[in-house]
Length: 92
Image 1: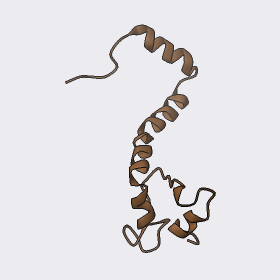
Image 2: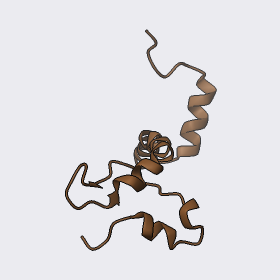
Image 3: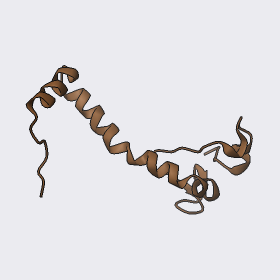
Image 4: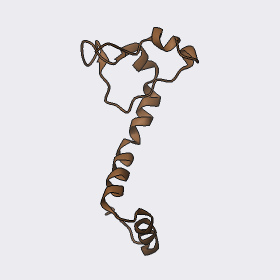
């Protein structure tokens, strides 16, 4: 690999050290999860909270993509589900 997000690289962006590093996770962290990763540990740690929040949306994005591939008319399908007003999950 010929690149890695470092503090020096982040400093070269328009916002300098205020630039936000985002990644959908999992990430290859140099010296932590692998020898030569895509991000240095200090950059990853500095932006951990934002990345974890971003990654928390991943299951919903995947579910939406699956839904869009499975139904012919997603708008009509969602409208029908809403109109039925039935619970769509089992509650314990």
